[in-house]
Amino acid sequence: MLRQPALSAIVAYQRYLSPRKGYGCAYRLTHGGTGCSGFAKHTIANFGLLKAVPLILRRFADCKQAATALADRSEDDAPKREEKTRWYHYCDPCTGCSCPRGKSGSADTSPDCSPDCSPDCCSL
Image 1 (cartoon, helix red, strand yellow):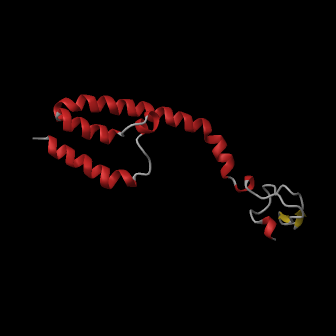
Image 2 (tube, helix red, strand yellow; image 1 turned 30 degrees about the vertical axis):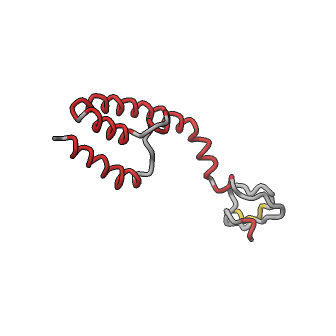
Protein backbone atom coordinates (compact mmCIF):
# COMPACT_ATOMS: atom_id res chain seq x y z
CA MET A 1 0.00 0.00 0.00
CA LEU A 2 2.76 2.51 0.89
CA ARG A 3 5.40 0.85 -1.26
CA GLN A 4 4.42 2.44 -4.56
CA PRO A 5 4.18 6.07 -3.31
CA ALA A 6 7.57 5.70 -1.60
CA LEU A 7 9.13 4.29 -4.77
CA SER A 8 7.57 7.09 -6.85
CA ALA A 9 8.98 9.70 -4.46
CA ILE A 10 12.47 8.19 -4.74
CA VAL A 11 12.27 8.06 -8.54
CA ALA A 12 11.19 11.73 -8.61
CA TYR A 13 14.09 12.63 -6.30
CA GLN A 14 16.57 10.76 -8.48
CA ARG A 15 15.26 12.29 -11.68
CA TYR A 16 14.65 15.92 -10.68
CA LEU A 17 16.47 16.83 -7.47
CA SER A 18 19.59 14.70 -7.26
CA PRO A 19 21.14 15.88 -10.56
CA ARG A 20 20.75 19.52 -9.46
CA LYS A 21 22.17 19.31 -5.96
CA GLY A 22 25.78 19.39 -7.13
CA TYR A 23 27.31 16.53 -5.17
CA GLY A 24 27.08 12.75 -5.01
CA CYS A 25 26.15 10.39 -2.21
CA ALA A 26 29.02 10.27 0.30
CA TYR A 27 28.53 6.55 0.87
CA ARG A 28 28.77 5.84 -2.85
CA LEU A 29 31.82 8.07 -3.21
CA THR A 30 33.57 6.38 -0.31
CA HIS A 31 32.54 2.74 -0.75
CA GLY A 32 31.41 2.52 -4.37
CA GLY A 33 28.23 0.86 -5.51
CA THR A 34 24.84 2.51 -5.52
CA GLY A 35 23.93 5.70 -3.70
CA CYS A 36 21.53 5.92 -0.78
CA SER A 37 18.50 6.67 -2.92
CA GLY A 38 19.18 3.64 -5.13
CA PHE A 39 19.69 1.50 -2.04
CA ALA A 40 16.41 2.76 -0.57
CA LYS A 41 14.54 2.11 -3.81
CA HIS A 42 15.93 -1.41 -4.10
CA THR A 43 15.29 -2.20 -0.43
CA ILE A 44 11.70 -0.94 -0.48
CA ALA A 45 10.97 -2.82 -3.69
CA ASN A 46 12.34 -6.10 -2.29
CA PHE A 47 11.33 -5.98 1.38
CA GLY A 48 8.43 -3.54 1.60
CA LEU A 49 8.41 -0.18 3.30
CA LEU A 50 8.13 -1.32 6.93
CA LYS A 51 11.01 -3.80 6.76
CA ALA A 52 13.12 -1.42 4.66
CA VAL A 53 12.98 1.57 7.02
CA PRO A 54 15.51 0.23 9.60
CA LEU A 55 17.89 -0.81 6.81
CA ILE A 56 17.60 2.59 5.15
CA LEU A 57 18.17 4.40 8.46
CA ARG A 58 21.30 2.31 9.03
CA ARG A 59 22.50 3.19 5.52
CA PHE A 60 21.87 6.90 6.17
CA ALA A 61 23.93 6.66 9.37
CA ASP A 62 26.76 5.01 7.41
CA CYS A 63 26.43 7.73 4.77
CA LYS A 64 26.72 10.41 7.45
CA GLN A 65 29.95 8.80 8.69
CA ALA A 66 31.26 8.70 5.12
CA ALA A 67 30.36 12.38 4.65
CA THR A 68 32.20 13.27 7.86
CA ALA A 69 35.26 11.34 6.69
CA LEU A 70 35.17 13.11 3.32
CA ALA A 71 34.78 16.50 5.01
CA ASP A 72 37.73 15.79 7.31
CA ARG A 73 39.79 14.77 4.30
CA SER A 74 38.85 17.93 2.39
CA GLU A 75 39.62 20.14 5.40
CA ASP A 76 43.13 18.65 5.50
CA ASP A 77 43.54 19.67 1.85
CA ALA A 78 41.89 23.11 2.29
CA PRO A 79 45.07 25.18 2.81
CA LYS A 80 46.59 23.67 -0.31
CA ARG A 81 43.50 24.50 -2.34
CA GLU A 82 43.31 28.04 -0.97
CA GLU A 83 46.89 28.71 -1.97
CA LYS A 84 46.29 27.46 -5.48
CA THR A 85 43.26 29.70 -6.01
CA ARG A 86 45.15 32.95 -5.43
CA TRP A 87 45.91 34.73 -8.68
CA TYR A 88 49.59 35.27 -7.90
CA HIS A 89 50.24 31.55 -7.70
CA TYR A 90 49.26 31.33 -11.34
CA CYS A 91 51.09 34.46 -12.49
CA ASP A 92 53.39 33.55 -15.32
CA PRO A 93 56.98 34.42 -14.44
CA CYS A 94 58.21 36.83 -17.06
CA THR A 95 61.34 38.92 -17.07
CA GLY A 96 61.05 42.65 -17.45
CA CYS A 97 57.44 42.73 -16.25
CA SER A 98 56.80 46.19 -14.90
CA CYS A 99 54.16 46.17 -12.21
CA PRO A 100 53.23 49.52 -10.64
CA ARG A 101 53.34 49.61 -6.85
CA GLY A 102 51.33 51.88 -4.64
CA LYS A 103 50.63 55.56 -5.38
CA SER A 104 54.27 56.47 -5.92
CA GLY A 105 54.28 54.78 -9.32
CA SER A 106 57.57 53.00 -8.74
CA ALA A 107 57.87 49.82 -10.73
CA ASP A 108 58.78 46.32 -9.65
CA THR A 109 60.63 44.51 -12.40
CA SER A 110 61.05 41.23 -10.54
CA PRO A 111 60.24 38.15 -12.60
CA ASP A 112 58.11 36.52 -9.93
CA CYS A 113 55.04 38.78 -10.31
CA SER A 114 54.71 39.36 -6.58
CA PRO A 115 51.32 39.83 -4.87
CA ASP A 116 51.72 43.60 -5.21
CA CYS A 117 51.41 43.27 -8.98
CA SER A 118 48.20 43.17 -10.92
CA PRO A 119 47.20 39.76 -12.28
CA ASP A 120 47.88 40.89 -15.83
CA CYS A 121 51.21 42.57 -15.05
CA CYS A 122 52.95 40.75 -17.87
CA SER A 123 50.60 42.18 -20.48
CA LEU A 124 51.52 45.78 -19.66
